[in-house]
Structures are given as C-alpha cells and as structure tokens.
Image 1 (cartoon, rainbow, N blue to C red):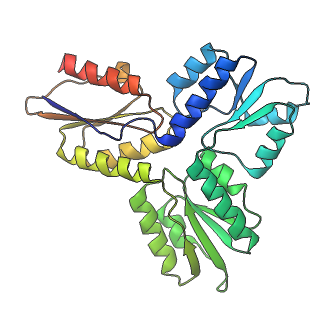
Image 2: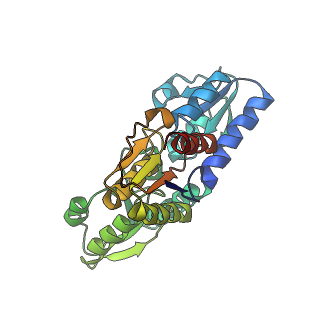
Image 3: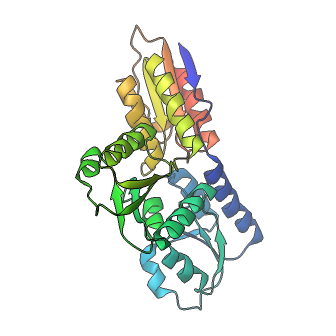
Length: 284
C-alpha cells in the first residue's frame, strides 16, 4: 500500500502565526482570552483551554465593563470594525492576530466602499471571516455562496461593484461565480483574494485524490477550508473520509487498493497529521 501525504497539508502561515501568538502570550502569564476559538480545530482549542486560555464569545462583548484584566487576542479570521473598536476600548490589552491576507481584504472593502462601491463577497455568510469582512464596508454588502445566488444578483446599472473572496473559498467556484456576474456587464472590479496557500492546497488535494483509491481529509468539524477540501476530493475519489483525528478513521482495506492519499486543512496541527500517517501505515 502506497501512502501519499500532501506537502501543503497542515497549518498555513496565518494560522501558524495566530497559534504562535497565543502560546507566546501564555508564556507571559496573566489572564488570556481569544475572541472566538483562535482557529477551527477542537484539539488546539482544548490544549489552550488546559493552559488557561478562555474563549470570549460575541455575546459577551456587551458585558465588558472595563474592569476585566488580561489580554484578548483577535483570531486569524479577523473581526468587524465595530468589534475591533469595542475590544480595544474594553480595558483589556488587545493583540491582533488577524491573518495578513484577511487584513488586506478589510482594507480593500473599507477603501472601495468609501468610494461608493457596492461590495460583493464570495464566501460563506456564516463564517467568522466573512462576517468580519462585511463589517468593514460603509455601504451595501452582498454575500454570494452558490451559483443560484450569483445568477439572482442584481444591482443598479450604474453601480460600481467590488468583488472579493473569502480567503479559503473554492477557487474554481469563485471563477465560476465571477463569470456569471460579469455576464451582467456591470462595472466590476474583481479582487481574487483567495490566498495562494488555499489554491495550492486545493490543487494538490485534487491531484492526489484523482490517483488515490482512498482519500483522507483531516480537519476540524467547523473548519471551512477543510470542508472544501473534502468536497474537492470526494468528486475525484468516492472513498474520501473527513476526520478530526486517527480515532475517527475506520477503514476496511479492499483487495484492489494500492494508494491512500492524505491531506489536511489549514487549521490542522502537524502532530495530528503524523498520527494519522502512523495509524494508516500500521494498520494497512
């Protein structure tokens, strides 16, 4: 049995930076909070909780009275302008670990909407990154996550439209939806803000899955980019499994299986990937 693991599997630059930031703050001591889970990986969040890091949820913002002490870390997904200001005015020390690629989208949206552009975000409206991006616009914002919504989109004929993407969105779907919008002949300025690491990860996953008899995607249950990897791999390899750790993997080898492929989302730590690799090698 041949096992191939994607070279791009695991932490991306932005996630690694955010996680390193939290552990560095833990070393300094004092109460540490993250605004929402620092990344979408339950194993990492649980480890940080054991080290005393508490997750500050959105509904708790209303109860910040200036008497809390400690440091709050803005996660890699970023936050809206309003939340950013409220955290900085809370009395807590504030450390911004927003991914630089997400910060770039914030700047684009802020500058373009200030010039009167209508903002279109191609992404998942439920994802914290997208909700944060929406919060940097001063005018109309539309989120498109599927083909039907792209086809249904309408704007005034003279509207200036700025299109951006969630950094972890499916690259092929982004191109498809932009093409639909351009058919309307709107005045569109399109910014492909899907990060290079995401595109490389998706391309490599697709290539491995096309050759594999079994494909394993490792990621957190709430990880958007991991879910997209699973979707991409499933199209190429019907026997694709989405797991969090090796404990979730229950495979019965078939006689004709010759290759197992492994990839992982941007919020999956290296040690979890290695544990899955070792488990597969041992059992197959």
